[in-house]
Length: 179
Image 1 (cartoon, rainbow, N blue to C red):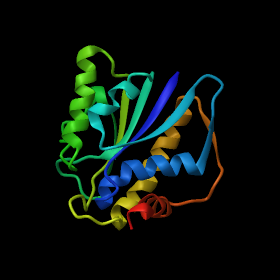
Image 2: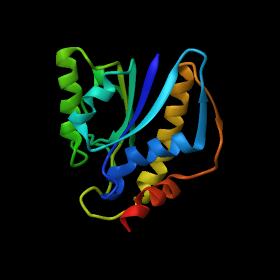
Image 3: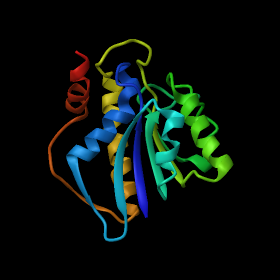
Image 4: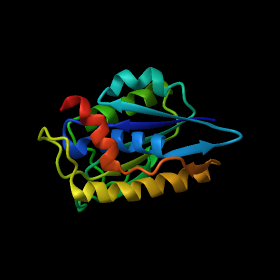
C-alpha cells in the first residue's frame, strides 16, 4: 500500500502552518520501515485542488491540518476518518479549510480519493503574519505526533528516531527563508 502523509497550512500565519511543520518534523525525526507499504511525506501548503493529481496516486491518505470544532478549545486535537467527520468539526479553523474540504469532496465525486484520515488541531493564531506558533498548538503537536505514531504502527510500520528535534526547531528552519 502506498501511503501519503500530507501536511496542509500556510507557515506565514503562525499556527496555520502546523500541518506542514508536523509533516516535516516526522520526516526529519523518524525512519519508517515496512515490508509491505511505502510512506511519502508531502508539504501540501495551501495548494488544495492542485494536490489532486498527487493524492490520487496513493492508496491511503493521512492529513495534518488545522480544524475548528464546536465546544473545542485552542490546542485540542482530533483524529477522525474523512468518511465519518464528527458533527462538531466545522473546518473553519483557517484560511484554506474550505478549499481542502472541497478538494477531498471533489475527489469523492470522481472516485479518486483514497481512504483518508485527518489529524487536526484547533489553532490560536491564523490571521496574523507571524512565524511563531502558540504554546497551545506546540503542546498539541506532541499529541498529534503520538496519534500518528500509534496509527502508522497499526498500519504495519516500524520506526526509530534518527534525529532529536522539536516542532519549533522545524518551524524556525522552514520559516528562515522568509526572515
